[in-house]
Structures are given as C-alpha cells and as structure tokens.
Image 1 (cartoon, rainbow, N blue to C red):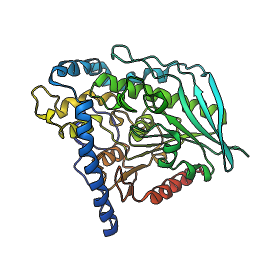
Image 2 (cartoon, rainbow, N blue to C red):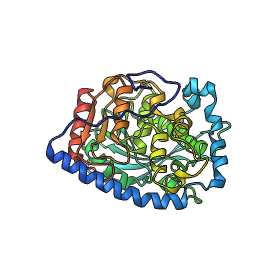
Image 3 (cartoon, rainbow, N blue to C red):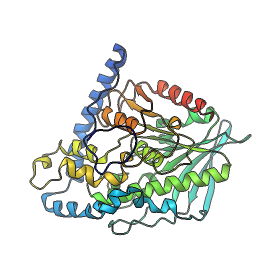
Image 4 (tube, rainbow, N blue to C red):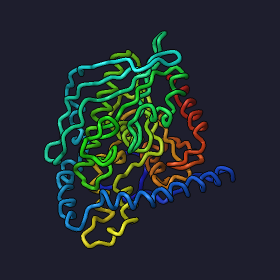
Amino acid sequence: MGWGAGGQRPELGELPRARPPRAAWADRLLAELGGAVDATILCAAAVVVERALIPTAADLAELRASSEPLLDPALHAAPRRFFAFLDEPAPAPRVETRTVRAIAGGRVLERRLRSAYRPYVGAEPKRPSGPVLLEHWMHERGRARATALLLHGFGMGRPRLDAAALLAPRWFEAGLDVALLVLPHHGARTPVEARLSGQAFAVPHVARLAEAVREAIHDVALSARWLREASDAPVGLLGLSLGGYLTALAAGLLDDLAFAVPMAAPVCMGDLAWRFFRRTKHARAEGALTAFELRRSFRVHSPLAHPLRIARERALVVAGRGDRVVPASHAIALARHWGGIPVHWFAGSHLAPFGRAGVADAVTAHLRRLDVL
C-alpha cells in the first residue's frame, strides 16, 4: 500500500524506500560519518536491550496478548478514540511554581501541573507517572509572541541537558518563551522500578508502550492549553526523536497548535521495533512477532493514522541525511502524509547531528513565515 498525501488507512504498509535529495559532497561525507556513529551505537545498544528488555520465548504469548485491546476493529476505524479525553471537557489544572534560576532577559520556573489522567480501559497499563513537569523560560519584559513547547527524546528528561539538544537558548533569544516538558517515565518521572529513563517507551509490550504514548499526548495537550491560557499567546511544538514522534502525532490530534516541527522523528513504532528486533537473536525465534504484526499493533498512535489537524504551512519536518536510527523513509512518509510539506535535511545523523546551525536557521525562517517571530 502506498503513502500518498493525507487521509487514513486501515493498515500501515511498509514505509517508502526513498532517499533524501542528493547533497553536496561535504554533506554526503558528514552523513556517512554520522551514519557510522549511529550504526556503532545501535550495535552496542542492541546487546544491552537484548539482555534487559527483549522478551524470552516464554513471554511471547503475553506479548501477543498485550496487543489485542489495540486491535479492536472499531479502534482501527477511528484511532482518535484512543485519545477520547481530548474531546472531553478538562478542568484547569492545579499548578505549583518555584523559581529555579535567572537567565539573561528572564527567569526559569519549575511548573508542576496536577494531572487528572486516567489510563485507557483494557490496555493493562501501569500507573500514571505523577504530576506534569515543565521547565518554563519566561521573558521579564513584555509578552512573548508565542511559547515553544519542547519535547525531548527517548532516555532524556533532564531539562538543563534537553535545552541544549532542543536549541532552547536560540528560541528564547529570538523572543519566544520556552517550556521544556519532562515526558512520562523520563527524568524525575522515572518509576523507581525502571532500569532506565523512558523504559516504558522501549519495552515490546504493546499495551504498555501505547499507554505511555497516550499519557504523553495527554500531558502535551494539558501543558499547551495551560501555557496558552496563562500567557494569552499561541503555543507550538518542537520535538526531537521520541519528542518528534509525539509532535507529529499531536499535530494530527490538536487543531490549535501555532506550529509543529518534528525533528528526527519516527512515524511507525512497528517499523522501528522490527528493524531493531532484527539485530537480536530473538528475530529467528519461532513465534516472534512479524513486521506486519508490529506495524498493526502500534498503528493506533502512529502519526500516519491521523490526518494533519493544523494548516499544512504550519508544519515543518526536519531529518538527518545520515540517520540510521530513524531512516529517511520515516520523514518522507510523514511529509507525504501531510500533503507534501517541506523537509529540511541536515547533514548529520540521529546521534551525530552535524548541521545544527542550519536546523536552527530553517526553523527560524519557518516561524518568521508564520509571523510567530
């Protein structure tokens, strides 16, 4: 099944076998170097994940059963039902605030938003991961024209480090307020029993991963709504890797975002899981999930299952030419799904992002076209 513009599909087919447009030799060299870094770290990560997270043969029956609630035909026909809380009245959250530090031109506040999140019925979830945490950079003088809500990648969740990866100082200096969201199960929200930050997003248990994504979308929507009401200014999303996945998904669920910029974003967790799974010895085990089953199980929260809800000109896809963690096919599929919107290709890879200055310039130009800056 092809990946044309817009619309929903009953199943997610294989992603397109496509490559970025041809680049100058210097960019091609950086892409090769970045790709080598990605490949090396992926090999090391596969060993760690195989020992810590990949299920044994005895766990496969439970793994298959975990996907059943998400394969409901009614849910596949209308995947937004998985996020039904978005269409229900939501009370204003109780917010606790403390000052963290002063920065040039403003101050940094920690916000704790009391969450009323309830897990999806039948998805066999773990408990929600506590209050929603934001590090909020606010300008002291005048009102910012907008707020950039920044979503970090898998395994991150420490705002001081996330700020650099997500170019927060650049957006603040340009005149935007900035809010760094700590995603569920990450950073200070990591459960005590977890082996690593973000583990819920790495496990092959379909229902638990889907529940983690669902809670994250709840937190994104809650944060965006509160920031918009508190500042009386628009709010947009910019996310990296896992945060890019959530940014792309949110753009298919929320119609009030000022902009959406997914960077190095996967769009099909099933494809990502299958590519990683093939690196382990379990890929040859009898009874292992197939690529089709993985795509189908994770479909309900794929950005490709939800039509874009904001104006096309408000979205920009950013991807690395040398990315071996999230191949170019993901960015190309998303851009096509969103009606052929632009993709900004940077020279580096997922873990070696050469060309960050160009990314900052491209996003800045995008926001200026929207009159956000």
